[in-house]
Length: 396
Image (cartoon, rainbow, N blue to C red; front, side):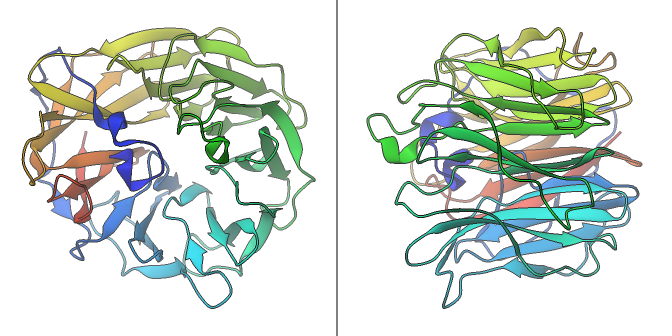
C-alpha cells in the first residue's frame, strides 16, 4: 500500500503463485482506527521494546499519532499526537519511523518550513509514557528536500539514516547516550537513483536500516531512473563507527526500499522486483554472506504487495498481502499472509493466511512480541487508497 507514500502505485503490482495454507492460530482482525484517514508507514510503524509494543501512524492532515500496547497488540492506548503541521512547520510528511529497546523509544519524522526540509526525532525514556521535545537531525535548504528516513536501536546505540537528495549521500548519525546527543553526519554511500523517472528532485536511496548488538546494516539503491537497478548492503561491526563498502544483494530491477530486521547474528530482508516477484534475503553471520530467495511470483488473477520482515531468536516472519485484480472504484478485498522461517531465513514454510476479507490491504508492519507475531496493516475502502484505517491481527 505504498501509494500512501511517495513511490508510484505500481508498487502494488505483484502476483502470488503459491496457494496459502490455513494459519494455525490467528485472532480475528481488530480495527485500531475508525477515522477513515489513517495510514501506517511502509515497514516502519511498529517497534517492540521489552514487553511494550509501539505504533505510529499518520493522518491525511499530516498529524502523526502514537499508541502503545502492553499485551502484544491486543489492546492499545489512546492516541497521542507526536507531530503535526503548525505555523512554522507547515508540512509534516506521512511516513514516520519508530524503534525501541528496553525503556528507550525513538520516533523519527520529516517536516518542512517555508525554506527548508528537516529530519527530527523525539525520544521517550519511559517506554512511551512521556516524550521529549523534537531534536533536529538534519536540515536541507533546497526543493529536493530529505529522503526517506529510518531509525534503529541496539546495544551499540541509536542510529538514524536518510538520503540527502541534494548530493545523493546516504547519511547516518549515531548516538551512544540513548539519543541525547548525536555524532556528526557520516556518509555511508551515495545514490543517483530517482524513483520518478527523469526527475532528480526525487533522488532517494530508499534505505532500509536494522541493528543488533554491534552490527548495523544499511541497504539502499545506488542507481536507476524509475526502476531501481540494484539493491546494495553495507554493514558495520563496530557499532556504527565505520562501515564496510557496499555489496550487491540483488542485481536486477526492483522498486528498492528493502525492509530489514536483525537479531543477534541474523539478518533478514524483503523487497519487490519490477517483474512482480517478491524476494527475501538473509544472513546468519552478520552479513558476511547473504543468500537471496524468491518467495512469490506473478500469476494471472491476483496481485500481491510486499509487507515487511521480523526476526527473533532465529524465527523469522515475512508478511505480504494478496488481492484480486482491481476494478471499479472500490478497493479489492484480499488477504494478509505470512511465511515463516525457523532457521534465520535459510528455509521458508508455505504461506499461511493471517487475515481474510481485508478491503484494500497494504503497508504491513511486522513484529515478534512475547505473545507471538503481530501484524499491523492499512485497509482501504476505495481504489485510490485514500479512505483508509489501520487494523491488527495476532498469531502464534
